[in-house]
Length: 334
Ligand SMILES: Nc1ncnc2c1ncn2[C@@H]1O[C@H](COP(=O)(O)OP(=O)(O)OP(=O)(O)O)[C@@H](O)[C@H]1O
Ligand SMILES: [Mg+2]
Image (cartoon, rainbow, N blue to C red; front, top):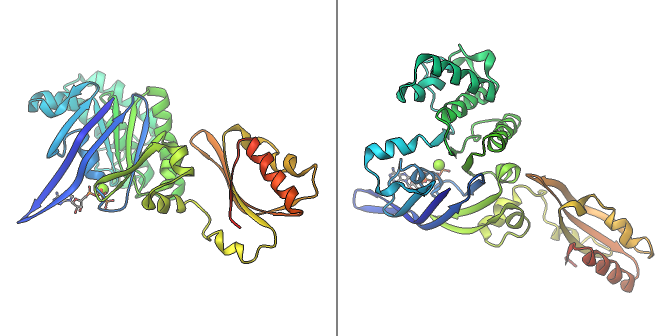
C-alpha cells in the first residue's frame, strides 16, 4: 500500500545541510499497522511527512496504492492526498469551529452537498464516540476528545491510509490506551492501513504488526513487533525495549543467587500452559521467579521470566532441556 524507495531528505539552513533521513526503503502492506520508533530528532516526522509529500524528499520515490506520488502534478497530488488521512500530536483543530464543522472541513473542500456532509459527519461522530459533543468547540474538549475529532476529520474522505504523527504523545496513559484501541478498531472495521510514529515502545507493542527503529535518519532495525521486541539487536532498539522491562538489571540478581539463573522467553499459546510445573514435577528441583513479565503484544501473548533453579546439577540440566523441548528459549545468566 505504501512503498518508499531510497527516500532521503536534506534540510539546508544557511550554509549547513542536515540529512534528516538517509536512503530509506520501506514497504507497508494493505491493512497493516506499521510503527516507526525513534528518539527526538531521529527523522520520524520528516519520514512520515514524505508519505503524503508534505515534505518532498531530496531523493527517492513514494508510491501509495500503486500511484507514484513523486511524479504527479500538484492538482493530481491534491486529489491523491484525499486517500491519505493524517492526525497530529497537537490535534491541529480549528479553534473557532465546532466539532461538527471541524469534521466537515475536508468534505466542504471536496464540495459535497449539505445533506451528504451532515450524514457523513453523523456517521463519523458515532465511529469515534463523540455524538454528544457535536456542537462544542475544541476548547471545551479533553485531549482525548480532541484527538477523536482529529481522527474523524482524517477519516472523512474515506482514506486508504492514516498517518499518525505522535498521536498519543500529548495524552495521559489511560487516554492513550483509549485512542490506541480506537485506532485498532478503525483498522479492523475499515481495513485502513496505519503508519504511526512514536517514541514510546508501549504504543508499538499495543497495536502495531511491524516496526522500524530509526536512528539519526537510518532504519537500524525492522521486523515483526514480536521478533523485534523479544530479540532486539541494535542498541537503540534495546534501549526502547528496556522502557517496557522492569527497572532493575537481572545481572544484579546473580550476586545474590544460590542456584542456577536462567532467562526464559516464550511466545504464543504456550503462555497458558503450566510449563514450569511440568518440567520440575518429576525431579526434586525447586524454582523461584525473580523477575517477570507476562503480557501481550497486540494479540500475541508472551512471557519473559528470570528464574532461579535450585537442586541437583544434573536434574537442573534435565529441567532446562525439558523446557527447551517445549519450544521455550532458555538463556543462562549464571
Ligand atoms: N524544516 C526544517 N528545517 C531544518 N531542519 C529540520 C527541519 N525539520 C526537521 N529538521 C531537522 O531534521 C532532523 C529530523 O527532524 P524530525 O522532526 O523529523 O525528527 P523527529 O524524529 O520527528 O523528532 P521529534 O520526536 O522531536 O518530533 C532534526 O535534526 C531536525 O532538526
Ligand atoms: Mg516529530
